[in-house]
Length: 180
Image 1 (cartoon, rainbow, N blue to C red):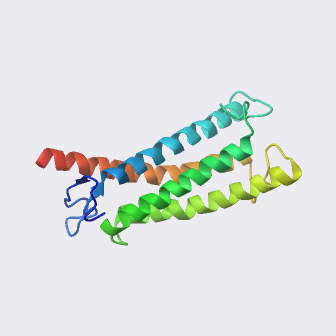
Image 2: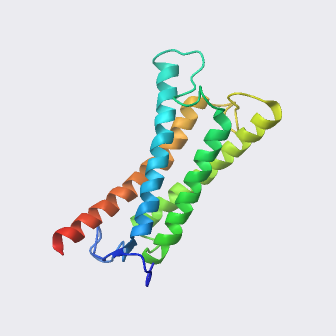
Image 3: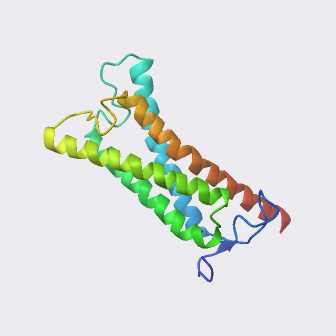
């Protein structure tokens, strides 16, 4: 944020020579985005392992890496809540530096919308888990689609755009270092 006591990366034109995508990126914002990537990477590994267990190893019950040791629905709820909060924080801290037509803004808004839906889905799954004690609760769309593939899809579409944002910021940072 402008005037922030937190160290910022300086601005440079990026992707579109007609305007700056980023005027500044605070170190704190960079840490939030990095934490978001880390949290969602762990979550993605869980869903990839479930997919491999179910469709490659033919496990009857595919619970992922930590799913066999803990109660899955509350853990996924916490992962999704944490990721949603981190995306909101990223938008709050980057918004003053972005225009609505900027690629980073569009990607982050896309992640926010999709992750909000994903969080609602997990809220319903947690409610079902607590009220009817289901192990792998269907949520909203789970009766119509394979749960493992559905949630692998959900997690992929909220992860890939953030990885793109991260790569844009890293590239911006390296450009700044190279030309400073």
